[in-house]
Amino acid sequence: MTSPSIPGERGRRLAGQPRSSGIERCLNSLEDAVGAAEALGLDASAAIAVRDEARQRLGLVSDAYVLALVGGTGVGKSSLLNALAGATVSEAGARRPTTHRPVAWMATSAAPRVGPLLDRLGAGDRRVHDIEALEGVVILDLPDVDSLEPANRATVEQILPRADAVAWVTDPEKYADALLHDGFLRRWIPRLDRQVVVLNKADLLDEGGADQIRSHLATVLGAELAGSASSRPEILLVSARHGGDGVASFRAWLSAAIDAKAVVAGRLAAATVDAVESLARAAGAWGPVGLRPLIDPERRRRAVDASVAEVLRVVDLRGAERQAVAATRAGARPRGAGPLGHLTSFVYRTSGRERRVADPAAYLSGWRSRGGMTRAAAPVREAVQEALPAAPSILRPGLAAAAEPGLLEGRLAGALDRAVAAQPDIRAPTSALWSLLGLAQTANLALLVFAVAWMILWVVARPPVDVVDLPLIGPLPMPFALLALGLASGFVLARLLSLHAGLLGRRWARRLADRVRAGLEAAVADEAFGAVDRVEVARRALWIAAREAETAAGSPSGGR
Image (cartoon, rainbow, N blue to C red; front, side, top):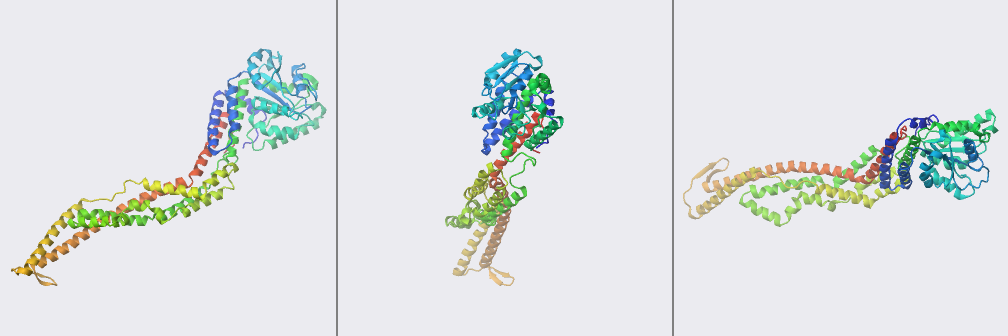
């Protein structure tokens, strides 16, 4: 993600710019992310809770923000609040009677406006003040996070998502407490825009010790926030037991946030960005390397090519081309072969031979008789299985199901059927020349009938006839000459019809094969990785939502 920025920089930047449109854009991105996450089967309940919280908070008071004091037992949260107030607001001590209830401290003038907000937070114990500089902030002294009473920690966890800013209070003894840093900082810091770490009891340290602890604490925070887009909180050293002078730096930090609307919007934007990025990270669509496809494009291309080759082998386009040529010749026969052509076509059709050898549509649709999709599915299944180890764990079951042999073969078979069915009406071409050849064949048949009749008459009655002297054959009576001429003409006309029909048929067969091949390639490419593509679409939607949320919130992109 991004490297930590200067402490407080992001908060000061947000305080000086309007955020209403930005937070709306963030929430729109969150809506998109929730939809994409649900499509992937991710648990989006936390993101939905952030969305609902943001919508509710925007409808409440916006000219005051809520600061939560969070820390362990004895670090001085109550003492810090009392030092700010100059009076006892919250009872201090290791065993306070109010440890199980948050105490709210607010300006008298703001009390009527923030009442509904405090009701929502469950802060029934309220104190007021008349410090004008702190009119725009409501401070909540929360129960101890390390209390032996589980309800206290539950109260903190319930209020934290609704707090607009947080002061993480610790002391020289507990500043590296795993409960605070591991349990809360890592979880909540990315969701907050304005926050600070307050090291109380600094008066117990000399100058060198204070610098050493500040440096160590900065290192701990850096480690906790590694890989997070959140800014590292500023570290303040205070001494609450010295009264107002001891907490001057904290008071100054509070006063710096003069625009409560910006603080509220900043917190909501930060929580929204974190929710969107959490969903994107769960889908492997966010991080230092950005969005990478689950399957390498080159590996995918090879798998599709191999699968298409196997599909085409089963479809047998060469066989379909032969069927197309035969269908063209079958269509030419009744039109171009004369009266006998109708008879031979009838026999060809009723015998079933035309259906077997001259029906490319039926041949393509009957691909199952020539093989299955097992070999075609294998390259796709192997590509998906190779990608599984590197895929986010939440997505692996869905991807594994996408590569399940039976389902994958069924999808490919369905894609093949749709590709064949999507072809235009598979009808053989025709030609006007065939009709002319048909007329010529009819006339030639009449000539043959006449020649045969004349020959029979000549054989029976022996009338005088002319003799034709033919090359290589010699003298030949006219009836026999006419018969030879008719037979030769019929052969030539039949060959012309066959050659022309074959030429048209081969052209049509090539066009048909090209269309079928293109349709199959597109169908297999779409369906072979269809389930993976649906995952990729949702992952990209999450990546876009995270980018847009960061842009709307004014954060540098951490998703590359």
